[in-house]
Amino acid sequence: MMVRNTVVSTCDALDPVFHDTQRDAMWTWLQLEPDSHIHPHYFVVINEACVPVTAACFQRIQLEALKQQFQQVECFRESNFIYIRYKVGLLFKRLPGTDVWVTPKDMVFWAQKLLQLNTMEALIERFGYDLITSFHVDLNPLFMHNAFPKTHWLLMR
Image (cartoon, rainbow, N blue to C red; front, side, top):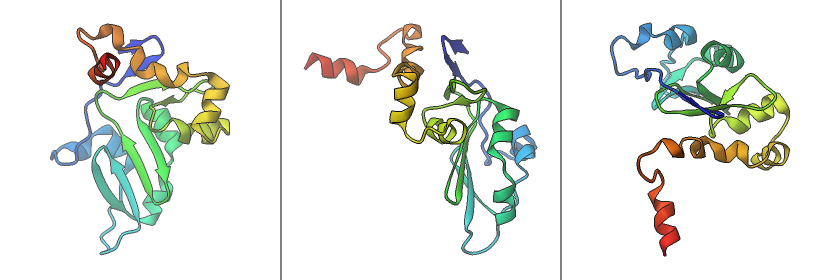
């Protein structure tokens, strides 16, 4: 679903608890090699499932290629963790000047990598507040009720 500049993911969630998940396109693409050591050093977190992986597997995962293949996937790397979220309801928008779709959570990672903008403040300075605020604001007219009741409650105080 796309509204103005925001896209809401509608793909099926990846959940390794389900027996047939290993045949899912994302799992096939990732080809994870689980690490069986007692104290693993590298991890791939897919949605809420943390999978310990070998160093070779961790180094092989190319996040740029993952974004190209699946587009509306949230992914970023932090030290020895790779975080991947690929499920229904994530809010995406195209990072200006690129072909990469980002969420609020992976926006700074991709801005650093592709635009050499290292902070949220640098992103705001370059593209304005609309870039970061329009994720939810774009969807507000579609709600039949107040989507953010805490804000409404705070205003009434």
